[in-house]
Image (cartoon, rainbow, N blue to C red; front, side):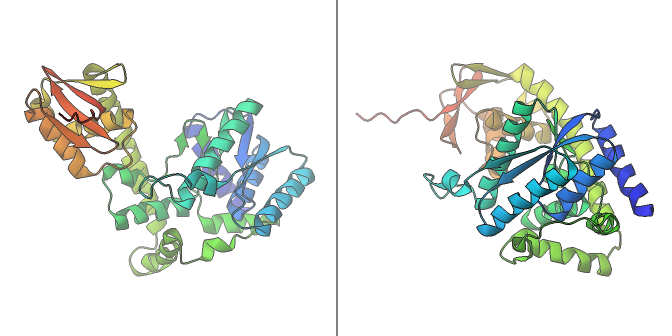
Length: 333
């Protein structure tokens, strides 16, 4: 009874905080314990659930068994299910090693695209995924270990467009307790135990770190992510306001107003530089040195000069403004 109250309250509060109105919802289900519990909790709370499953085909017969399990689960609960099949390997082919997504990145991109198509076809406003408090802690810790700026500490957002994550304040221990109390069945994914994946190794670190340093480590990392996400939302609004007054598009070129860059605080200038690159689709391969170089050029660049940037772009000074554009071809005489 205690677990039921705790989990249903946490999920209800999360959905309410994200202004999610109760109605039909597409629940992204892999067949694992997290998504199976999410489906059960949403049903308990009276949501009209539609199961959405994406079969990546990465585990052979195990992937087929996951799909069969979910079709059986849907039938047993009187729910509809929609299934999409995707091929992550195909998405990775035909790219240079630098531009090629990892297998996990390709699978994630195809999965979210497939879920979006399902939601569109069914006219469903919300898609629920089963990211939980442990996932959040793992994400923040992983980014810290790899190196991250303040934005990275925001972790997994509770909502991204139509995607909501109702379990984000529910721990894996609570999920397991719910599943046990409700007598649920689920599928186990053997790849979750493989040390080949960095996240799995970080997952094994968390219990030891909690035992050695802070028994409430999951909550501490989750609180850090929420606090940083709130700060980021405020900063993003400021960046958007500045971008509206400084950026304009003309024929595929991003024109940047050239005045007053010296007056901007450097953290804001760096974020504007990143936003400019994002608008040209080149934010993925950008590092802080790239952004610092951009800001320095925006403050000091002379007319007729340019710097080269990732994504085959260049930032050029043209009169009183700058142009972020595709690199001009080199002409030979």
